[in-house]
View 1 (spheres, one colour):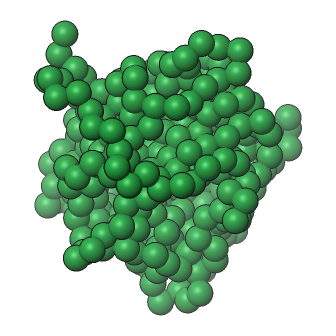
View 2 (view 1 turned 45 degrees about the vertical axis):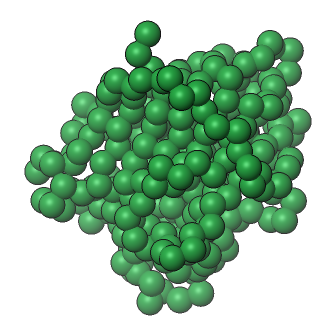
Length: 294
């Protein structure tokens, strides 16, 4: 996003079209996060190991195209000036037969049923199929590198209980800039409906690796706090948030669904400098969700 971390206004009106980043607020890094409770025991509630021959459509659905309708007006670029059209075609989303989900961004040379766009990719979500409040959400992912690539693993509210974005919240478990492979970010969006929303962002810096290798990205989400991890290393915790006219811990006390996607271009990392980085692949080894045992 721009230096102000400003999210385009139109994106705030339709939560299903949101991408992971935006709003105005603090992005100060917390170097000594508060540790989570030590006595939590987790039980698995949902998982996808991607070991089948085809994607399980009982677990996943798709966002399609390059934007959405708002009051009968088409908003291109998902409100973030993204350049890709999302599809559900095998060229953009498939299982590789080795136990991994592949989300692939491609250069497109001609128009098809999705429109005339220079790039295609995929965005998967569990909206309407699985959502959960609190718990452990984790995925083992290998990310592509290159200017203009914007992969993310994030959560959105199943219902806009407290109003449209960002009053009902957004939790970014992991998002990365392809131009900066040594860093990933974890963010929450909250406050009130746009433009009175805010956000808090933290980042993790790799020292002997980068996003081009497999890493486990995770949050542990409790009623009191959210904790961010990379490869079991706690790097951030947040417990200070609010939603206008509603008591804490709103908005992060409702069911959220998962989204996994790879965007091209957009405000977060800018336009690709070269098409030599394509095809670009986001490889997902597994996704697992747990809840605390009573």
